[in-house]
Image (cartoon, rainbow over all chains, first blue to last red; front, top):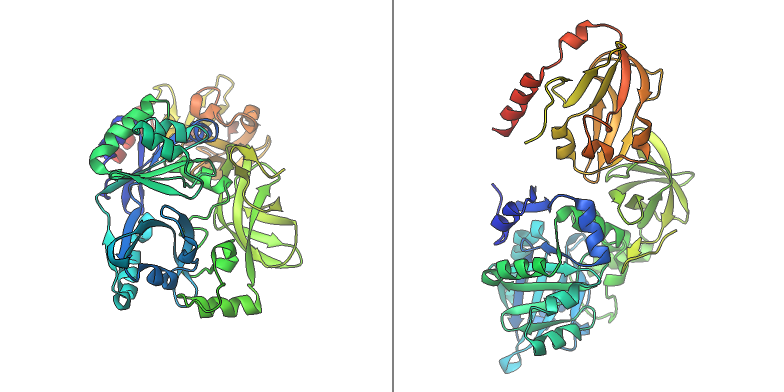
Length: 367
Length: 131
């Protein structure tokens, strides 16, 4: 039996099809994964993401520590509430995890506090890695196991969540810019997400989450499971840790070069030397999006054939409910080409190379 | 609880077989199978004239979640693949024993039909799986 979130019983009573994910029993869908997907693109949907790890880091050297720990540079987080997406690398520049780090703000005596949200499947491993590296920095590392987390996503998501806040807090929440957050008592509301739509991710005490889930449902926010979460993130061109990247993948070959801060050149971070060596000789592979031009469904691990160039592999593939055709992310040789063939169950099918995202804020971006 | 019509025959791999008056059979996947797969987004059925062996993979049903082979319950020659499924794969979810049929074929022997599971046998298998 896997671990359960505070919403587990409610999911069961609401007819969720449960599935094991990264050691957790999570809802896959509540009847129709495709309808849940459309709800997020068109109105608003909510996801229980309490299985994700929340880790707070505080201390006088917290910022210096995170500048060393992460490939992106938290020096960019000037104002409290600002958020940054980053990879956490090992010494060989392999991706240990991808995460969001929030600047919670200054505290007493020159101390600063940050919050990191990591993937469910990597949270124990991450925590051990972070604690190990934190030793020489005298920072306090605390896992916030007691917090639940829900993502409310879609064009109407922010307004519906804000309606549950006190009027002055609602105003503040609605004025948050993308990749910013604010604390309201024990709630932490961030304008971030994993769907390509606008919305909030809310960290809150487990004792509040049932009420919030029910009230959002009453306000017409659709319950969504991990199935829709996966098709939404894939349409949005966002990587899934464990599928599109892992410890054997570096950021330059999975579309995440934009998240690595090579400047300033004198900032030392874990994996920097290895990554600079790769950058100097040029990454042998790159990430692309694929649009299948025939009927069928692209799936992870299918072979991608680039005529005259070489071979690659699909890292995530699905049927896109928005595009009504199959799309995929693939790792391919780092050359320029715009057509490939994919070995789909023994048949070679043509696919077109596109730059992800496929869909963003309800709009189809690839033709 | 998934539906298991009493007048059909079944396989362990969750196909159903309906004997038609002209001696041919209609094949599909069971209500249980479609429910396990989730919403279908792509179905590939065999073309007319193809000969298949019992247990041979002859159709593909793909949901948002995964791809799955469908095995021919008996040996024979395909007389028709359901033409509607190319544009309406969801028929398999909505009506697995009716409009969502996958193929019709003419069995090469009657013996294999006798070896299929009865509705009661298939229900017993499903009950075991749940236990």
